[in-house]
Length: 572
Ligand code: TEU
Ligand code: CA
Image (tube, rainbow, N blue to C red; front, side):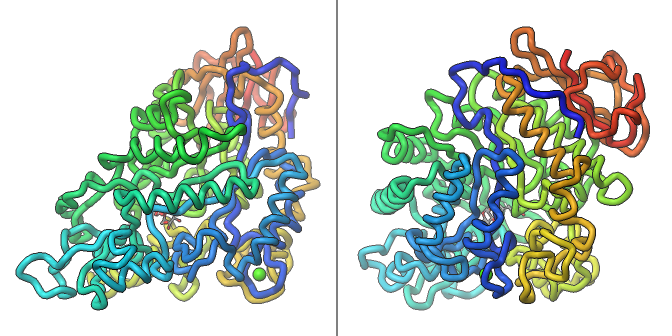
């Protein structure tokens, strides 16, 4: 860790609290198991809160712990106002919320209201009758005219599900199909029904009254669909792409504005709200996150995490530094004077960034810290996904039996059975892009269970835990953990990091990512060599003075050149 001590220059007063915050995402199944059933839980999180507080984190985002049959690991909820016994009780959650607040951190829950579980009483009732109380709380449609309901080709339209297969499931009880953009056990809610919105806003208010500080909102830009539900253009999957008809639908602004009005506006505090929005553009994000006219504090966009494939996540494509510069730079520019960016490399749906964009072998530490330097010094709110602060990597699963994720298992079945693709070919894709890469148990120690559990874990531990773990890093000044701590401290001590404008610096290099942050007379230059070659960078002073933070020891820094995966931030 090489950081100059903080200055007490003040940030701009109109900054929202989350502008200077750093968020830590917890995936509860994989964080810490306190009762040795091999599955992470709430008391396990409480027991490790100091690891997170030790980083200087301001906000914890907890992925779903609500009652759920766990088809999609909790993103399929059967009771929004109760905790699944797997994770504990509502009382356990209150203890966690209090423990987080006692450490000066805020607590954000995951809101999954584009769909419920098919075990949610709302759906159970809705399926029972076409005229019952919840009859149109979901998207029910008759079979395509002239077809036999339930037969292939009888689906109301040709949309494909994100988890392979059709987006429609036949229900013999009701004699109709219901829509599910994700698994068949995640039926989409019909937000066009005001009673659905009433129930959801009441539930959100119930949670805010329990003392949480905001929501991360799951695929929130999918809640308004084109009422015609027209066919989409057919893709390689053989199904139609429904995105143009269910992303940013006709009522999206009306429903989010109603949410803001009926849940957040009347309250004294301000809440962190981040909307996950696949397919959102910078222009749309600017509108959604405008401080005055917008509805959300920020959104999660997907452009930079889609650079290494051609739209189908199971394909692969080389990512260049200029791709990253171009994409992230465009988002910085678009939200420079209105709206606000979220900043992330990792989450529970993405493979580990150090393996994906970095080098998880020779330059593991350097690439993990270089990527972190670039991300954390951009303008926006950084998110750290559990294990990222340790440099956790993708996992070399060599057998389909090790995988757990419904998206990956459905894809494997679909490719090997329907298209007769070689299993090892599909396994390659799962190893590279599968979500289980992010979901292996947190590596606390080098012990057999990685300090996660003494019981066999629900998903295998990454074998590299024997050397890659928290115990070997938290007290090591040169560790990735300590480097994240220093980066986060910079955001808290340097107003320019929070409020400074952003300018990409053209250093005429294929592999150097360089930019400037400026706030009045405060200027910081960030230069990062995202390659294994030593490089020089034109028109940027690479001296050894004024270095705020750098991931190479000072005695190894060259004047005028950057070592492989070296990153530096200069106060100019
Ligand atoms: O993810 C939505 C989403 O965009 C992802 O499904 C993405 O397309 C895919 O993971 C890329 O591989 C949210 C949650 O984050 C995810 O965990 C859930 O599975 C999904 O919604 C359904 O709730
Ligand atoms: Ca447990």
